[in-house]
Length: 330
Ligand code: ADP
Ligand code: MG
Image (cartoon, rainbow, N blue to C red; front, side, top):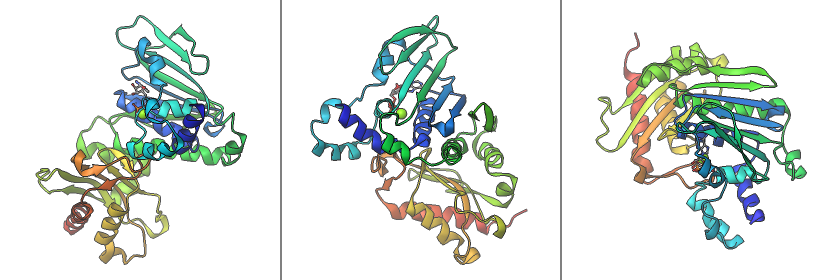
């Protein structure tokens, strides 16, 4: 069982940034409005994520660390199928199998918080306001070989910041702060504006004012309807030659950051007349699609998706960008 969870962990937990992503994911799922990430040693020594979400009731704390699908994985051969099921309910268990982990949480109705140490299973009263704090210490402590594959603290920190940035672009309504070695590394305040206005403000905060000055707003269909269960919104633009960077391409499917060739190709196709393939467009693009038309479980970390009909998505994204570029700018 220990072996299986370590193998599963290897698919989910590659480096500190993978842990950050999963913990921030959970905080957002819990309805947090403010998420604070504290790191030591690029996240290898400590990753602590605090949120003000709904919390985990005392009785469910030990449950949160258990793999939901334990009984389904009887052999290594069956591990193959885990990938296709996705890793729902696997993240905390996977992280706890490769690091020291502590949970501190309090729900609305409880008089105080409860603290659970993953390794010992010890549950004790603790103190904090409503929400959850999860601490992950000494990542890969038991597997020095894997720890050796990690890069410098600064590189791991940069990946951690990138993981939070991806969440932050999609959730302007939530405030984020990242501390490293006691210093504030990045902070994005919650934006009290709805829809594309909120996204625009957050994009300016995260990617810089020049991003938003050069970008056009996307909205497809133009009237905002989603008659076919498919919508595209966001911003796309042509960077300054000097600032052209391939790492400023953010695509989201149903709110989740993805790396997707269909979307990337459609944006490039739309920009082709302007860019002639010489520069990378920059974009933050949100695709909303009916859940039955996309498979999110093709990759254990859900960073890749498979559309049931990739042509309709390609068409929608290309149309969204082309029609935005066709509008004369004020
Ligand atoms: P999943 O998110 O796929 O359900 P995880 O292993 O990431 O699986 O988390 C297990 C469970 O622990 C979640 O389903 C949730 O009930 C609980 N949980 C984890 N983190 C938090 C959090 N920050 N706030 C509230 N509940 C949480
Ligand atoms: Mg999760």
